[in-house]
Length: 72
Image 1 (cartoon, rainbow, N blue to C red):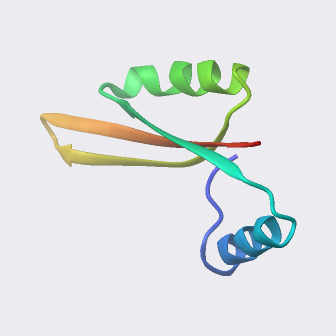
Image 2 (cartoon, one colour):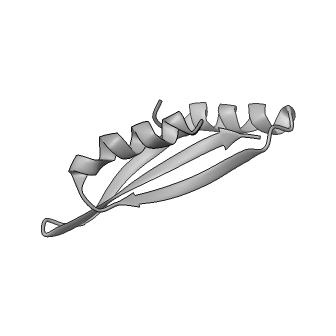
Image 3 (cartoon, rainbow, N blue to C red):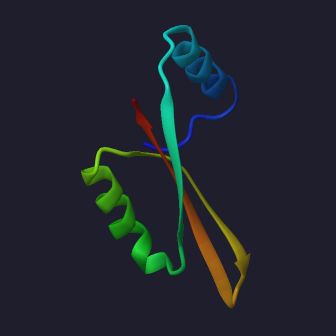
């Protein structure tokens, strides 16, 4: 789980491309950090894998972004 960086990400992309594996991608915004874990569990139960996680905003209003992937 998580995001591969740099050369590892390029390797995974080329491996999927070579095998002609199509991927579905979904980005989910979570408003409060307490909901991040539950959201990940919910999407994993539906067959999605967490690819990356990031947060943006200011101390008063932070949004959390979860990027999920699923093979077709």
